[in-house]
Image (cartoon, rainbow, N blue to C red; front, side, top):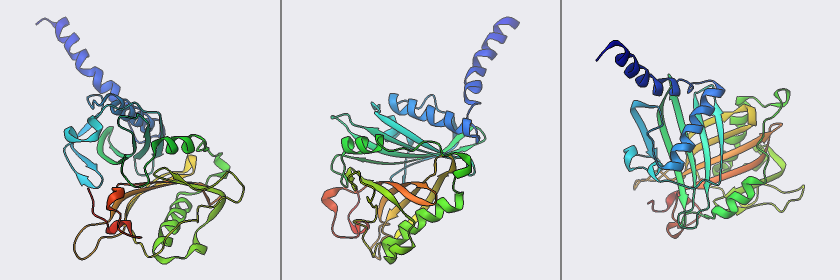
Length: 282
């Protein structure tokens, strides 16, 4: 092989590297990572993802091989939106698929490390799972404003985490007065929706007590006033289990809750009482 042939081969080998170089811990770099993820999920093909050696891949709190994961299932995505957390180099993408043959709503977290995707964690729901209705989820999510908040009006990371934590704490302690309720506030849970479009709509309705929302992991995006918490609905019990895998996504404006999205990986048929975390998991 002559010098020019070697140069051509070397150039070809550098193409993927150049393409992956855009992935980083900047806001633009994290946006590039979520774009690559959405493209991969659409095709059911992860070849275009810059995956780190030793990648951690998790679905519904269970580690598994990525080649066996739902990420390998091609999906016709109707809507997606992402949180970009430059402080922790993480992203979260909410994906809504209303395809009648295989509807899904996904919450996918990624962690970037030196330009490569080091972790992918997905929580998914589909037909038969807790209050699932992808059509409703799309309808209500699309009607909400999750746009950029002007810099002078943005809440701090601490304020966003505190608002989310107070809401989740109320499930155990029942101290609703400590939650920064905003009005109007609408909650979409699986597909069930609170609120009727009036100024007094509240997210407080239907919040149970006596449930420990445990194993919390936060992703925060101050630019859009959003915070998502990967958690378990219930902390498990002496006979095993760790609660139902769950995500709670919040929009906070001026320190007050405005929108809440909840996904719970729990078969509706296995629900056995107030504490979803006590139900059998699949």
